[in-house]
Length: 107
Image 1 (cartoon, rainbow, N blue to C red):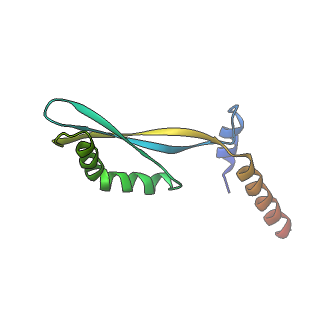
Image 2 (cartoon, one colour):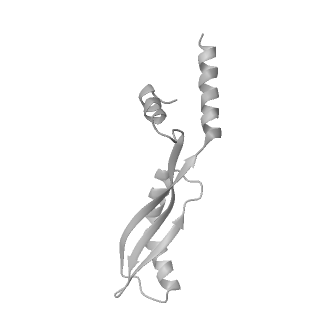
Image 3 (spheres, rainbow, N blue to C red):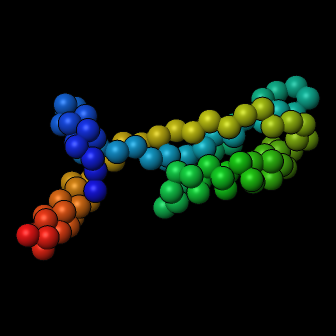
């Protein structure tokens, strides 16, 4: 359930039931001459799970990409995350129905 303050903030936005999630991670790594980027897609993990998984495995992903590029992995430069907007009306209505049912039962 959301708080009254969250509801007011959302109501003032045009896409009030929109949410964001991490869609992919872009891992930047370098060999001795160049920087490269490797993308890792998020497949149904929460943002925190995905971030932890990527940070734990980033060097391994970079080493695999270096092998595919026929070059030597030197260093991990950074990780950035790309987000996608989710406008989930079904999730909103499910939450609304659950709140309305709870309110009805509490009367």
